[in-house]
Amino acid sequence: MVNNILKAPEGPPSDVEEIKEKSDYLRGTLKEVMLDRISAGIPDDDNRLMKHHGSYLQDDRDLRNERQKQKLEPAYQFMLRVRMPGGVSTPEQWLVMDELAQKYGNNTLKLTTRETFQMHGILKWNMKKTIQKINEALLDTIAACGDVNRNVMCASNPYQSEIHAEVYEWSKKLSDDLLPRTRAYHEIWLDEERVAGTPDTETEPMYGPLYLPRKFKIGIAVPPSNDIDVFSQDLGFIAIVEEGRLIGFNVAIGGGMGMTHGDTATYPQLSKVIGFCKPEQLYDVAEKTITIQRDYGNRSVRKNARFKYTVDRLGLENVKAELENRLGWQLDEAKPYHFDHNGDRYGWVKGVKGKWHFTMFIEGGRVTDYEDYKLMTGLREIAKVHTGDFRLTSNQNLIIGNVTSEKKKQISALIEQYGLTDGRQHSALRRSSMACVALPTCGLAMAEAERYLPKLIDKIEAIVDENGLRDEEITIRMTGCPNGCARHALGEIGFIGKAPGKYNMYLGAAFDGSRLSKMYRENIGEEEILSELSTILPRYAKEREEGEHFGDFVIRAGIIKATTDGTNFHE
Ligand code: SRM
Ligand code: SF4
Image 1 (cartoon, protein in one colour):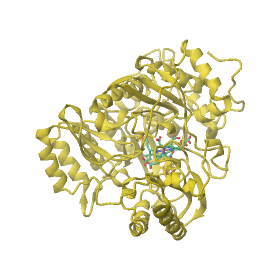
Image 2 (cartoon, helix red, strand yellow):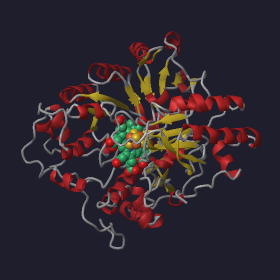
Image 3 (spheres, protein in one colour):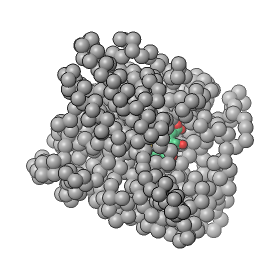
């Protein structure tokens, strides 16, 4: 149903639109090229389609120059991302991921900012086996990347597990029901025979043959925790709980973090709340919102193709009216809600039904065995005896969830034995940190992030300690480029990579994820970063008001202007 007043931008379709159109519903020549043994890589067109199957071809950038000198093809390898709505994994699934990471990956698991596992370093010849094993474990990688709805996030707040359990069921339903219908994934990776008659019978009723103009992200928050950064989602739902009962969701549309350096037509944006729906209306709202983006999103210029630009271009009220038109009913007025933080809360807590939850701090979300910290082994041993679940948080941390009182002793002993940590020995600043993958695997990284932020924090901690701020939660986030995979624009201190060793520094985001930051300094290195923070942090220590968060303080003190909307992020 296309509205005659609303218009999609004109212009020739982008190259990806053409690739999707010719792809025979995401098949392309993937089946054949994955069998080819001459190159460890795959052609670019197939790589574009590969994303819809949850994987990217990458190369090890640490080895790039050396291999070029030796006239070798890049050290090609694949990244694989699991679709795991709400970040909930069983211990059995954890053990499968752990085994695959050791056998076919680079011996690490990355817990991502969207509550799932990524594996890096998988060679082409091992991809099919790896994907098959993941599917045998009742997980999959369908639509974990690509121009479709992605992994649906939900709050991992263990304090309110009954609500969490309900919200988790919704995130799972949304993720499952919004999957592409094509059998391409099953044919390419799981050896399913193609049924005669496809693709004529395969119509992708919701997506259509071109799928969406760009990726689409949904998350569900449960106040007062905004751990999933609900306003950064294309479509966010805020659970409304009355007298301990989930009565529905506020609906927020048009958020996103990515931008391009030097291009003010691109910007991070926060979604806006447009109304309230009942639980049973949730799927309808999601589906109809997605079809609006399908029909009006920019299919010509990919960097302006996200739903946030569609909403800003068409106007919030017009998009809301179009949504209600497609729904055939009106959203109720939004209900009051209150968020007080967007980070995680660490350590043991007792939830309802007598179950215990332990939130661990996982720096940079990287699970591996370090020389003096056997994190991966420790978690493997826990998974072997654990009868509850694991919840991957949207801050790259991990909750060992639903531990019975009987098991708590055994799991606590393993936590102790392997020195697994709730992060209490670190500053609250480190515990509130997030960094995207960046180098060496991310092809888009302009600077280090995950490998560098811990070292930078070592130095910032000295300033923090000198000023009595060790227990002060200040969110700090770093990304290796402006795409914003660690939601940099919602960090009270944010860094975006510009070039090796150089970052743009941002300040002024709100602690509860409700205000974007603004650029404070451009293209600076470590020395200048530390020098700036050596001035600002002591001022915060001395001049802050009772309970005032760092992001609010820098605005009140006139250090940075508030960003009131994504459209003034660059001003
Ligand atoms: Fe991201 C692209 C990693 C969350 C915005 N992201 C990438 C790629 C695939 C690079 C590429 O296109 O070649 C990165 C793979 C690196 C690697 O080696 O693994 C990558 N993104 C990640 C992860 C693993 C970061 C992490 O350290 O945890 C996160 C995986 C999430 C998941 O499980 O699905 C990740 N990416 C995000 C988020 C945060 C979120 O969704 O809450 C964002 C900002 C929110 C948003 O989408 O606006 C994000 N990633 C991007 C963008 C910019 C998109 C845009 O339209 O603005 C790109 C580039 C693109 O799509 O062209 C990108
Ligand atoms: Fe790569 Fe940039 Fe995302 Fe970091 S923010 S993982 S560098 S795309």
